[in-house]
Image (cartoon, rainbow, N blue to C red; front, side):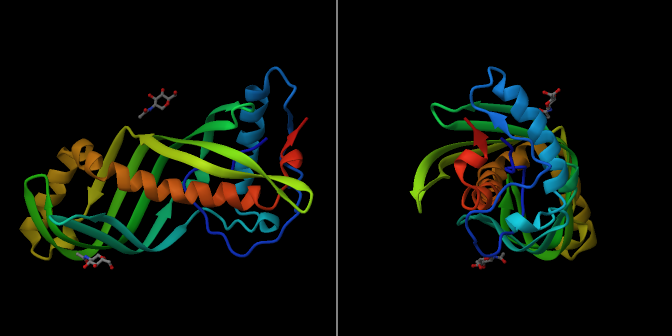
Amino acid sequence: MLLWCVVVAGCILGASEGVSLPKYIKLCRASDPEFDKCGLESGKEAIRHLVHGEKSLRLQPLSPLKLPFIQLENRADFQLNITDAEITGLDKAELVFFHSDLEKRDVKVVVHLSEIVLKGQFHNDGRILILPIKGEGPGVVKAFGGNYSYGFHYDLIKKKNQEFSKITKDEFSFTIEKAEFNVEKVFGDGALGKQTTQFLNENWLEVLKDFEQVIGATIGKICNAIASSVFERVPYNEIILP
Ligand SMILES: *[C@@H]1O[C@H](CO)[C@@H](O)[C@H](O)[C@H]1NC(C)=O
Ligand SMILES: *[C@@H]1O[C@H](CO)[C@@H](O)[C@H](O)[C@H]1NC(C)=O
């Protein structure tokens, strides 16, 4: 078994069916009493390769990950969009936890990333906590010491007499040690930019809470796309041996 949930991202192009997993991915047996341990080891090695891209599965290299448009927040009182975003650091993803329940068809993985950096053009309007903000400009957000957790449930579906797994429910969550913002240029006026940046850095934990759901949903979608690109192409019995 392996986990390409990996983390946080990747872009998937077209589809072709009936592909085998790359040789560097060691398969685990469902009958193995230490299946989780095998999954963790296999997954660690798989991720080390997959982050650099895998043509046979149509996975692009994960770093840098380019996202043309992210709508981070869209409320009546606050909007935040980022255009031309680029995330770096995902190639350092390290799988630290793997658990699966093959009977219930549930899988959970946790990936550790010591540092990821998001650069982009920020556009915002509204307020964060009590602070009114409006403006646009280049900004950088760094997240340090993160544990990123992706759990999913899959069903088995038949296609051309072969069984494939399909994710039917999933969830993404994360904890980080620290976030750092540099958004001084986002607010035009120098003093306001400095104050806002300082405010965000001092209150990063609460600021992040504000965005947690959207970030979770956005990244969850990316994990889903990566895992699905494998599940759609590689038959289930070639991912998990009996
Ligand atoms: C953010 O993007 C949405 C959707 O394109 C748009 O309606 C909104 O005006 C944008 N907000 C800002 C502050 O750029
Ligand atoms: C991430 O996980 C490691 C290992 O379980 C733990 O020591 C660390 O405190 C976690 N960090 C965060 C920010 O949750």
